Image 1 (cartoon, rainbow, N blue to C red):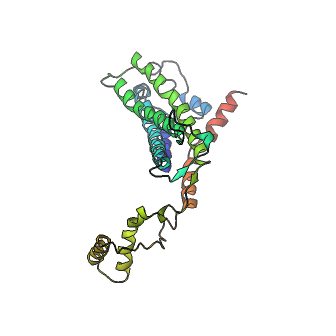
Image 2: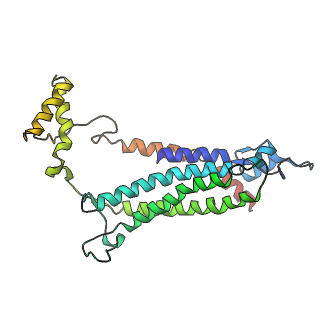
Image 3: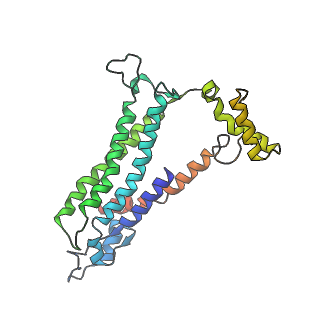
Length: 269
């Protein structure tokens, strides 16, 4: 999600330029001060080329849609994982009854409807990128009525994505993760790589260690080494969640919302 927010920040940089004063695309004969309106509205910069200020229609929406779609893609994949991990074939996680629904016919089921709807909504956001691309395909330079349809595609997506993030946050804040999942015999062979690595650390060549553990598995003599000692950054023994949180805060701090909010407040006085 940090990378998703980085792309959102890049999209914000693209659109955070004042287009006012470009008129129909070729500027105005009135002696307007475009720099002054840029300051008044809290834009970071001015779209100096008045032709590009108009030609940027469609392109700006597409760039924003792609950035929003990146975040939607992450949420959609998360939702699919949760749907899988909740079902009885996995049973990795569970959620309170008030956040799941019952089956229409199977009384034991807990359906992950919230995540299924998040996934569906996020997939419609991802599809929006293609819609915007197709709406503006082969249009010549200038303004065309086709472009008014861009707004009805893009603007509702912000609220939809906000709602999906809110719902995902609610679900994850109420998740229960099953303890000791890997103790089940069906996951014994997941530790085969650990066994190979242990032999390598003892000086056995990797190819020989690989063959030795493979033969032990075939013979039914494999004993999984469940006492894992992963220490490097990002491993299961050193998740670095504090560093990840710091990265996210650093990216969020790059958005100049303070400047925009102050400009808006001054205009409304």
